[in-house]
Image (cartoon, rainbow, N blue to C red; front, side, top):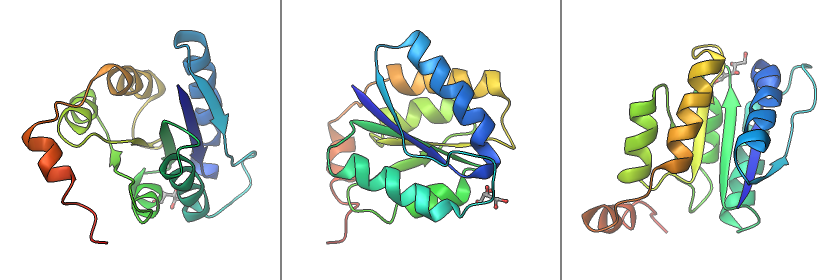
Length: 144
Ligand code: RB5
């Protein structure tokens, strides 16, 4: 499984910790699409990069982070086929996989501490989509 990851400057330190965490605890290949320093950048660029990577099939899933998780998730969701879910708790991570088949996990580095970010990632990685009526619904999301 390939996981694309991207962030803005507000989450650069957390991204490094999260990449180490995933590589140490899961047999996934992490593809780091930036940013690559704490210098100020614009979150839409990284939301789009990760969104396009996942939507094109270059990665199976993605993780995106900014300060709140809001801006970068809004940007990623502009890419057709992307269902980026901003998850502030493990409960949101669980329901976003079971009901929405979220293919990108969005995290807010300024609002969730690192232990909780790791817990959210654990749940998001290990929870399966339930399909059925939820498949009918997610198939209605795209307008084109
Ligand atoms: C950057 O200061 C901040 O606006 C960004 O990380 C994010 O929170 C936007 O939604």
